[in-house]
Length: 165
Image (cartoon, rainbow, N blue to C red; front, side):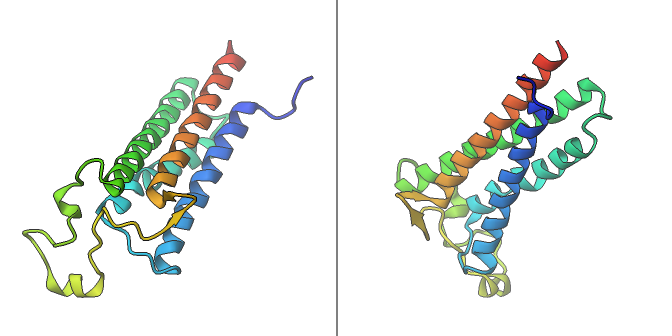
């Protein structure tokens, strides 16, 4: 049975949608739900801020990119989300007390502090879990979702390689 839609683009599109829903949910939990992100939470958003625009560009230019450029761009996006999965796992370990977080996550401020900014937004320690669902924190879910995005991107690359060979 032959599909009229290429599986490589479907997998990449699913990765994009999953990433977009995740970052929008993170922003919604902050600005609508009132959860304040810690330093590691904010760092975990970087793969979404960098990877999703690049992935969107790849999806828009899907059939117009040279194959080498396509592979490099997809590998970069996959690497960004692999980094995101690591950050989510690391942050989860900090929350469970398996290892200490960075000194910026102590919740007591740093050497350089602007009192005015601290008054506007509370400093949240990285080992404080503000929300758990089914035993996992948002950092834990981010690790799983980032790993799923990496898996979908890997499938896209694999389907592309099989299609072109």
